[in-house]
Length: 149
Image (cartoon, rainbow, N blue to C red; front, top):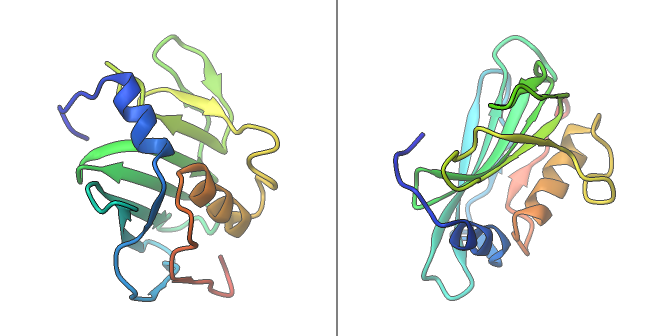
């Protein structure tokens, strides 16, 4: 998404940094083909982030959750309901899977979801809640759950 390169230590620190929603605006979980971005800030307000939620256009179960730093750098992205991902080394990772920033490769590599971190890979709302925690967002963002999440 961007040609900006972060050192791995800096990317890891940004992922782990505690964040919260930057405003108090409620947002609706997107409908099919929709997307929503929630602005986030570090607790000291020195770093800005975005939490993105994207839904597939046709497939009810397809979507993406991601956090970005500096508007364009994808730190972590969780893909669900999609095809397996093939990493640059040829390894295929089943869906759902997690992309985490890797120095020199950005978000091109995927890893399986960690057991104990992600409770239920078939529950999109549980995935959302777990992804939020994984990304260091310490207060649940103001996103209204819909009937068909």
